[in-house]
Structure formats: C-alpha cells, structure tokens
Amino acid sequence: MKTRDRIIIALGIIGIFFVFATIQIRNKQYQVEKAYAQAQQEVTSHDLQSILPYKNKYMGNAPNNINLFSHLPLSDYPRNYSQNPDTFTFEIHFEGTASGMGKNRLQKEILYSSVAGFALIDNLQSLKYDFTDQCFTVRRKDIEKQYGDLKALLNESSWHAMQEKLKKTGDVERIFTEVTLRQKKEGMSG
Image (tube, rainbow, N blue to C red; front, side, top):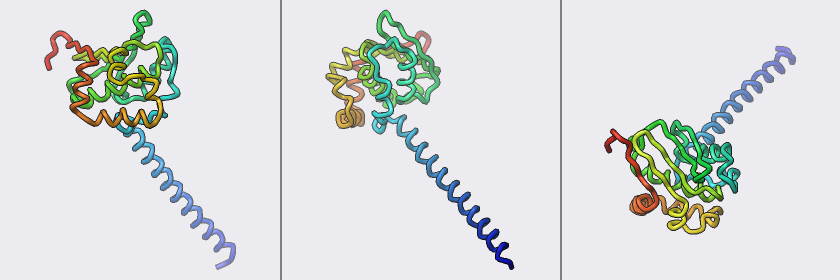
C-alpha cells in the first residue's frame, strides 16, 4: 500500500470520526434545549432571566405583552390575545378547557403568570385568563396584597422564594381563591 493510500484512508477515518462527534454534540445540545424548554413550563423551575427583557412601563405595547406571556407557563396551550387599554386589562383566550388541565397546575400557572405580568408591566391592572369553560380574572391589587411590592421580586433570590411557595398546594389553593374572580361559562359544568 502506498503512502498516498494510507493518507487517504487516515483522512477518511478522521472525517468519519468528526461527523460522528458532531452528531453526538448536536444531540446533546438538543437534549439540553429540550430539558430547558420543559423546565420553562413548570412554575417552580421557570427562569426569571427569560422574561426580564419584556419589562415595560406600559401595557399598551401589545407585541411585548404577547412575547412575555409566550415565555411563561401555559404557553404550551393554543391561545390568542386581546387587550383593553381603557381598563388596563390584558386577556389571554385559550382554546382548551380549564377543567381539563388539572386544578393544581391551573392554579399555580395562573398565579405565577399573574405575578410575572404585574411585576414586569408597570401599568397593567388586570389579567383575564379565558378558557372555553371558565374565565379567571386577576387584579394587580389582589396580587400585591399577597406578594407585596412586585418590583422587589425581580431578583433571583426573591423570585426563587416566590417559586418555592408555589410548591405548597394548600397555599396555592388559598391564594388562588383570594386573588381570582372566577366565572363559569353558560352551559358548562365542572
């Protein structure tokens, strides 16, 4: 075998090795990204840094609001948005039922999303979570009664402390009951 043939074979082996290594690295990156995306759907592991870019003084900035709520738990449910600048209300209209989601998940995610929305959008006064069977309205003043100064939560340690409280089902149920106005839709049961 000539030297040239050996070099070609060696380069071929090296090339195959690099292709294999690249595939392995990309698969690992994909798994990390997938795990991160799943963690963003859970209120106790959601990353504050992922939503800080959407901090805004005015709720009238619809694209900002949509981006914020698209980066919060519940974003895996099909939905659309509307807002009422007269009442400083942002509405999220879900295509599914609230009852089909599980009581604890629903309560935690509405509370978490409400805290995030009010902490990051200064003049937002009300959030409406509109499902096909029920509608939940959360007001800033009620969230502030539970959590205090919302701007003070916008650091990692305070945010994590708030997330830890959402692990306690009894606390979640109590707070949810105190801060939400619930409205069943006609013809629906549950």
